[in-house]
Each structure stands twice: as structure tokens, then as C-alpha cells.
Amino acid sequence: MSAATINSVRRTQWFAAAIALTAGLIFSVGLTLGGMTDPRKVQGFLDIGGLFAGRWDPSLAFVMGGALLVSLVAFATVKTQAAPWASAKFELPSRRDIDARLVIGAVLFGTGWGIAGFCPGPALASLLIGGADVLYFVVAMVAGMLIAKTWFA
Image (cartoon, rainbow, N blue to C red; front, side, top):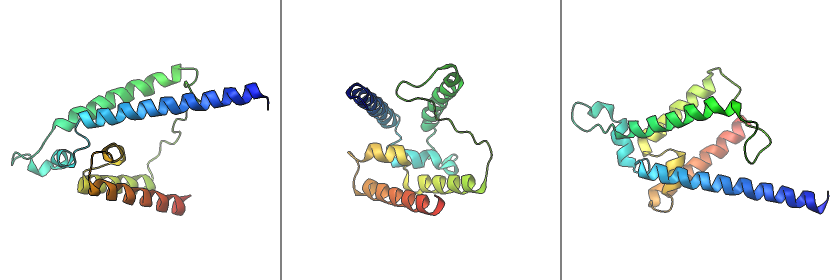
């Protein structure tokens, strides 16, 4: 491989890393501004039973609705693009079926989100400002991912 090719590959890798870092920072700022990093706010949203008692907090529905709109636009326009900025091709899901692994994963995710008030993105965004509970959650989340990767690989 020539020196010019190696330098081109390195520039592409740095560009991809810069895009990923920028996207991650923007995402974490959005999660923080939207209140997704506050477990009490998330649990208040998930407490549908508190609707008539005045405990339900519907504000996160707007955050999720905004995320859904962005996703709908992105998925609708991705097929019109030639290629992503820092990759050879788009990696889009090809499966459309609903199987037991998907349902079990969704139930586990929802249960963990309801109990802890965190999902992976907000938990990582909260690492710098959260306490020991966030750290424990992230450690347990990573352990669960490693276990799942080992069992289902």
C-alpha cells in the first residue's frame, strides 16, 4: 500500500471519528436539554397511573415526537443519497419481522428504563454530571451487553 493511500485512509478514519464525536455531542446536549438525563422526569413520564393523581409528566412526549420526526425524515431521504460522508455505504436494517428476541429485548429495555429512569444514551450523557447510580447503571448495562453478545453471538 502506498503512502498516499495510507494517508487517505487515515484522513477518512479521522473524518469519520470527528463526525461521530460531533453527532454524539449534539445528541447528548439534546438529551440533556430535553430532560432525558433526569431519571425522575423519565419516571414521571412513564407513570401513566399518575395521570389522574396529577403526577404524570407528558413533556417527554414532545422530545420523543421531535426525535421521531427527525428519524422519519432521515429514513425517507437516506435512499436518495449516494453514500454517507464517511463510509462506503449506508448500513440499514434489512429485517422486518418481529421475533421473540426482539420482543424480549424490548420488554427488558422498557423494564430497565422504567426502574432506573435511564436508557443507554442518556446514561452515557449523564456520566459526567451523574452520581454513583449512573455509574452503576452503565456498568450493569455494559455487563448485560457483554453477556448478550456472548450468548447470542
